[in-house]
Length: 437
Image (tube, rainbow, N blue to C red):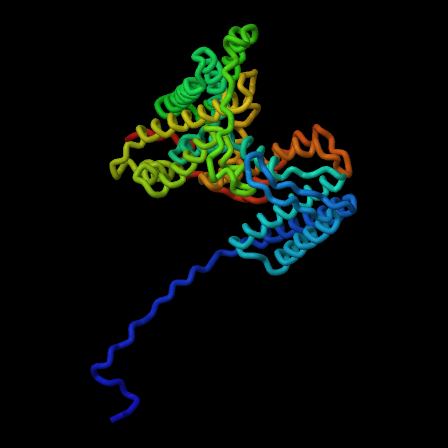
């Protein structure tokens, strides 16, 4: 008997199938573009920030209001700018020569942005002023709250196939309603309810004209924005301007400190010492993020936004779902409007939203129509706005013009969308009216 032959009863080994996911490489042109961008950012960090920074040590204070106490960080300004800038340059050179994978490039881009911001703050603080990083982050979240809520409003609409350019108008009308109703009723909660209802009514107008009457959704959004701007301006002049105490003095929600959680160093005062609308924003983001991928409603919403005819074929009522989602989006935008008035300043002024609805729409696009991406983009824009205030209080080595500081949020929007996102794909049926056959 051949000793090498297998025994008759020996089990036959099964074939092992291995599935290997091969990640697609980026195009050579995009690889060169991102590499050059990294090199330029690194050179700016080294040659501009590093050379103009004072040799003094920059002091970073990470303690936010209500949070635990952590020691201040002392960082040599020039050394930090030079080292961090060189690391960014090396990452750019590697990207030009070899190239990172798309997944690695996301992390490299985020780390490079963090290094640049840290270098910039070290440069700004080298004049002798303490950089209040904790307060900067606190203000970033505070300013990003209406942007996050506005982006969630747009997401509810656009993932079901309706373009919502009217976020600005929904927020503005709701901001007026929140201040007016809250003052008349003498109750902030009733003011919030009034803002949500008015936001929902604006969403209903968008839904009826875009879904039933098939009006061009982009044009309709612009018209609703102009309508809200004109109506709130007219009502402000007629009701509030001369009756500030009786019709435009609702007050505002103060911060609520959550026991134990608010004592966590750094993040405690940042996340858990906010007002009730910020906490509601946390809940809304979590609910939408989970529901969009793990519930029947989320599956139907994504199906209607991608292929409404196929969704209709399997029994989904496309028009009804779009009505529901657009009106819900208006209600969420209404909560954002309530935050602008009774969640922060405690009164209404003309055009108080100041384009936040459009920035929220940009955050939605930058975030690739996903809840987490939109939140990250909104936080970026909020950080850019808060940085404007912080820089105006610091004695920077080179004076920065206040008009230039005012452009920071919009510059961040342009660079983020152009440099970090690249091509994005909206839901396939976004903006496409559906007529049931």
